[in-house]
Image (cartoon, rainbow, N blue to C red; front, side):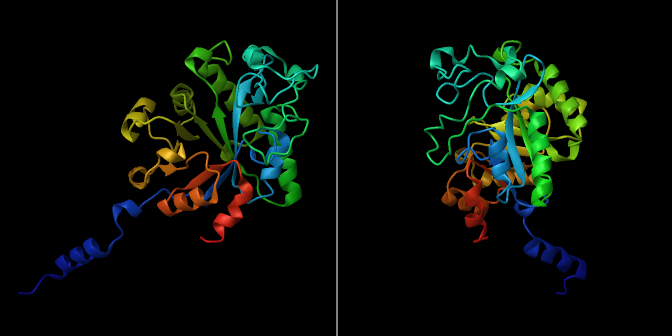
Length: 302
């Protein structure tokens, strides 16, 4: 019995076409992100750390935001001066009992500059080179990066900006989410980097406000829970450009599912060559790392 040509074509498409799992968001290139600049090498979230990261093939600088008393966006993982890492203007090390009382939200930028958050180094990162350095403003970081990339003759990187917020922190350590978002959007516009930013957060509230006010902005949902992709996205209420989980929570099936939805997958924080290579084989779209100096070793086998 003869089979019609249209049926043959349909069967060929079924057997030889790429599976749905192979469809994935197309990014300009694999997105290597320097976590807090290059925390493994230099004090985190500081101008030297971000400029050092750009000496390696990173495409994105990952950073955290707090807000000062004078409404400056400050680059800091915690909205206070962390114990063990920072010293007070008088030179004494910040203790654990006083750390959370040293609120960035209650200090001006000039007061913040009086704290040394680099000379102690970080015992978790023995390769980190200690140096006297303060927590900079977002504006100062962007301007320094623009100057440095011009000198290096490389394009301006992307900035993956984490809004550090929690309901319990509202008007205590940080502004309420809407005020935080408005401040960030205004700064991004003034700096002219709208096309070079992604906004991320574990807190869905600022992401929801961003999506409502600026639906074209790239958003990443940070994940550190054991919940399903479905439940996490339902909590967010819309589909983000990027799903960014702790890398040990990530399985190949999760990557395939997110790619079928058109969502890129960029896990955090991956600090060994072995883990980076394993994740690349699984099909992630980028990796956030404290050690951008390891990128070339990973890439040479790709």
